[in-house]
Amino acid sequence: MSLAKLTEPTRDIDEEMKETSLGLSVVIPVYNEKDNLLPLHDQLISAIEPIGISYEIIYVNDGSTDGSEEVLQDIQAGSPVTAVLHLRRNFGQTAAMAAGFDRAGGEVVITMDADLQNDPADIPRLLEPLKDHDIVSGWRKDRKDAFWTRRLPSRIANWLISWITGVRLRDYGCTLKAYRREVVENLELWGDHHRFAPAVASWMGTRVSEIEVNHRPRVRGVSKYSTTRIFRVLMDLLVVKFFLSYSASPIRFFGGVGMISVAAGMVISLYLTILKLSTGADIGGRPLLVLGVLLIVVGLQLLLMGLLGELVARVYYGVMNKPIYVVRELPKAGNPPGAPEGRSTPQRPG
Ligand code: UDP
Ligand code: MG
Image (cartoon, rainbow, N blue to C red; front, side, top):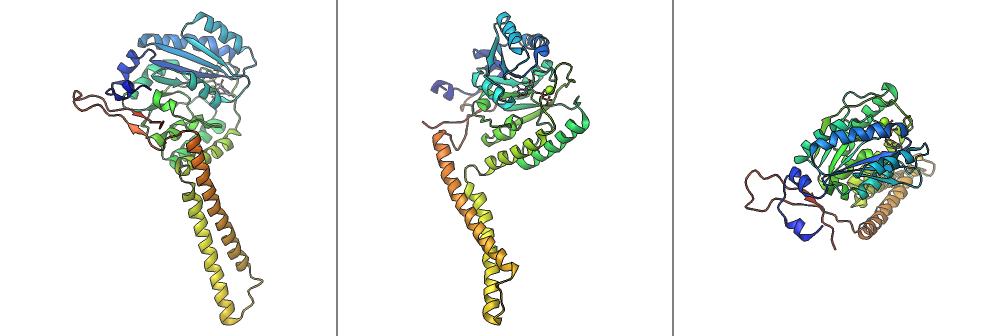
């Protein structure tokens, strides 16, 4: 980002979208959706054209094997606003999204599914709350999926993710989301983490809003996920929580648990020692002794793991050239009253 851009007073996202060469990028991961692509493209064009901003549609073909590739090439040939990325194999929805983010040049980036379950007609409504938020997430209030295998697990997952990450959303799983470009530029997606994007982004102090969106049943093609996804989501949640809370200082997690463990082991050992010295009791066969020793050994291991973690974290932040802080740009003093609040731009050192 140029210095001129950094020192400019902050403007409304509307102005920003109209004045920058590219207002909106729509990123769509595609895996074996050949029959959905043409109607999807038509619906997208008729939803976005009336907004009157410059835009691009980026389809990321995630290694489709059903002929989606050819359909996408046809669409691209007839549409100058369309870009298609073909991944060499099926890397998964998160990776496909990340590929689209890397290519996206719009001031606002919107993600959605290719299976027509999300409704492109919702796109204009997503832009409105972006004026004072950094992420606008869709909420499929009236979700058209099976109850036991989809809606119920998703309810529990949403509650759990909200509770553990502190970013309260009713529908993490909805792919239809809008992001300001600074968020996307600094979002590191990993594994299966696309659904956690608002939580992952929260480290940079993002303001998230959730709005009701339309949801439709899948008419063509099949879902790419089974219920085993539930376990992956749980594991990912663990990783996300750890990264959010402790990636900058792993010793606080490991050190805390380690110290409690060592202290408990010491108390037990001390008690047994006093018992042995004062009454001469035989403590050699007592399970408590095993517990005491175990707690001390495990506790020391955890402490060492924390120190190793600190080393790894420094290497990580160093190698990735990752800032440990984010600056919010506010309008310059003297800006007309009522000027919109600033937007944030993470500052990369160097
Ligand atoms: N998808 C993808 N790569 C994958 C799996 C899915 O790009 O490995 C895309 C898929 O084409 C669709 C979106 O991700 O556009 C959501 O997939 P799906 O509709 O199967 O998920 P569900 O709605 O059943 O949760
Ligand atoms: Mg779907």
